[in-house]
Image (cartoon, rainbow, N blue to C red):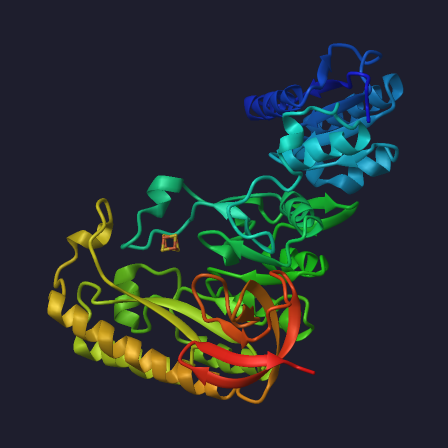
Length: 439
Ligand code: SF4
């Protein structure tokens, strides 16, 4: 255990935003018991928060790193120039770590590695993976906040703002801490997972010295190396989402995609101001399933949107039949205070919404049930969620916690939450399966 008070120096270059970043880093380190040193020789490690906006700022940043290396020798680089790790390492190969802008977690964990904090009984009450409200064996991994779209029924952008993604290294460090703490399944979430990193211009950040782009296929591939189940939620089907399919085929991430389609009729989608039209989605689903036959598709829909005609609704039912979605949630449209859709004409009568909701859910149930019956006789991996005196309850790769079905393994009382077992499926009903551990 470290008994000397660890001291950190900082050189802060660039704009006011960079200065605020430096303040946040220092605030966090000070709260962990680090002292802040005003000189190079009083510091055990020096953070250089760089600017990379103009050529002159880059040159100044490289010079500042050189000075810190010469005066102290133990240097962690962060800030805007951090996205060009190769240039930094070319000039200063001895720097301890390089992280990009707004990567507080990554800088702080680089400091922890270079200079462990003092043991603090209060800090020690908080495990390294943070405090979580989910069971020990699964965790939600939030990769961004906000959204750049302006769907007419949604007020999230006005509450949370535009898309703000976390650097890939920060996400991966959190994921690694969770996996080390015993998490077996990571659920990747955001408002718009497919758009991840757009706001960062897909900048690279270094995870264990390897650059990883802030882009969903690259992030998913890196998460897939942690040896845990990785499940993707809220993935709008932008073209590059096709790049996730080979990762599923290779078993790197779960063969599961939660895509919020919301509707299928082009007229309703236009009124909803959804990000893109769905013309080629059915074709793409067919292609995805050819590559990954076990692909599970989950989606949510809104029925009774203002202006939805019977023909639009029939189109949706037909589309659902063709898409053969495995899991479906459906909401009856309601006005939300502040949403643009409130002002649209032709609001649908409540009883019509009720009736369409019931028809839609019955159609979805029939599709799902047929797909579930096809699993009887197969042997599937099951992650155990809970065990009681009657047996174990878990989930297959096709089931996300809380929203999808369960796999009941009656009599299997010796299992523990977090175990992954192979089970032979004997029975299926609606969204649930029953089976026993394969001998
Ligand atoms: S519905 Fe989703 S994609 Fe549309 S604005 Fe809201 S958060 Fe963004």
